[in-house]
Amino acid sequence: MVSSLLEDQLLLLFVILFLGSVLGKVSIKGLSLGSSGVLLVAMIFGHFGYQISGTVQQLGLSLFIVAVGLQAGPRFFRMMRTSGIVFGIIGLLIVLIAAVVTIIVSNLFHFSPALSIGLMTGALTSTPGLAAALQATNDPLASVGYGIAYPFGVIAVVLFVQLLPRVLKVDLDKDLNEANGPIRNEESPEVMTIEVTNTTYNKKTIKEIHFERYHSIVISRVIRRDRNIIALNDTVILKGDRLVAVGLKEELDRLCHDIGKKVEIDFHNSDHVKLRKVTVDSEEVIGKNLKELGLRSAYGVTVTRIERGGFEFSQNPKWRLERGDVLTIVSSEDRIKEVEALFSRKHLTVTNVHILSLSLVLLIGIAVGMIPIHLPGLGTITLGVAGGPLFVALIIGHFGKLGPIRARYYQPSTRVVSDIGLVLFLAGAGTTAGQGIVEVVKAEGLGLVFGGSLITLTPILAGYFIAKKWFRLNTIHSLGALCGGMTSTPGLGAVNQLVESEEPAIAYAAAYPFALIFVAITSQLLIFFL
Image 1 (spheres, one colour):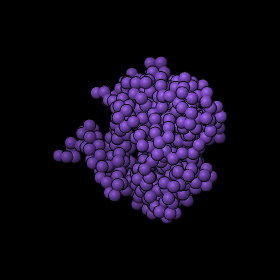
Image 2 (spheres, rainbow, N blue to C red):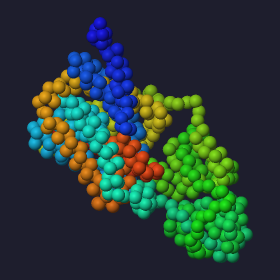
Image 3 (cartoon, one colour):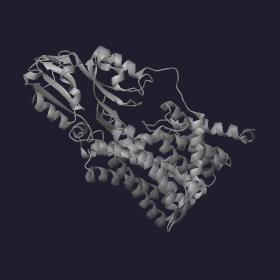
Image 4 (cartoon, helix red, strand yellow):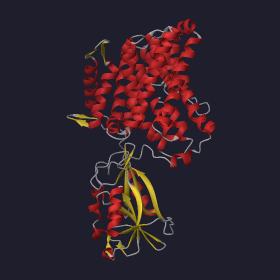
């Protein structure tokens, strides 16, 4: 009875999705399979002869890849133009090392190309890589390799990032504070306290002094004896006041030369002036600039700096705010709460997926994926259903809008598209892989386990060494970049538990898009070397 019911494709699909989701939520000491639970359940059903339609698998793959591309697009190209390229290079090198080890393991144990590439994508926990591997090899053994290596890939990264600081006895907070990180760059603002000694500026308001001629500089507070005064346009400056200025170093030095001298000061705060970071998430402020919002005049707060795409910049009144921007603001507690409410205000709208745009991105992406690309000396490849939509989505995601195509969806919208596409793809790939998994394990035995371990551990150790020794990053940034290069979200979660800081996530976000894209490309190119 049950067997006959499962012959129905729709019923079979949702049984697999349900059981896989339940398995994915099972957590053991903070570790869970997540969406890969669907893959494992599907492989079990595939072993017993059940099969999900290839069309469902392709649909899921294209939806998932487009969502990934639209999310990564803005950050990917921005990182390429800034010092964040260092983290991208680390991500690329980790994937390259994994590919070289894969070639060695494949020749050593005589694994098939599909199985070898599947092991690599599983070791790197990269579902887009698996998708590209299936496209390139057209062999379900890629899913078998992925399913075998994936659990070890997750556990190995999590254990490494947790155990390394203990083994090396690293004080992570001290190590983090003593080194520059991905958030700092040549455009990052600095803080300087300047005592007013030039009588020309005595009894003038901040507005009358025209600080805008220094472009990047903003005065966050005025310290008068033991008082902290919030710096607003009508705040009067007196000789002897100490101004807390934020801006680029060259302009801070010029300001210091013009009005007084640099002083070191302990920010004792008896007037309860607060400094806090707020994240832009309200549609009321997205697209507006700081000048239009009038935060100083309307709310009595000062914005000293802006973080965007993992980098920190001096505040600029003309910058249009984007969702996810992080503003550092200074004011009193009650005023800061008002601004926090303004920037996080929600509407009932939770999704803005534009079906016309999504369809066009998929259509153009699939068409691009069908174009043959000739590689001299290697042969001809196509980007396929994985690479084509990813390439197109990255470009459109970067611009946000091209003609009738809109690509800046709310995060929940992109997440829904991504999650649905991912589980559909894994259900199809899993049932196909399950048909031969037992035979493969019997035939290859311990070689699979040993080979998968090598492909996982070598990039982990080499990636950390490259980040720490070559690029001289601190431990936290090295571990964050490592997790990004290994595309390991559980690994990032483990690093976040080690230190109360956003720095690991920033390093991860800088390396992740490069690794994600490169592993998909590498999965297709590896077939020429195996």
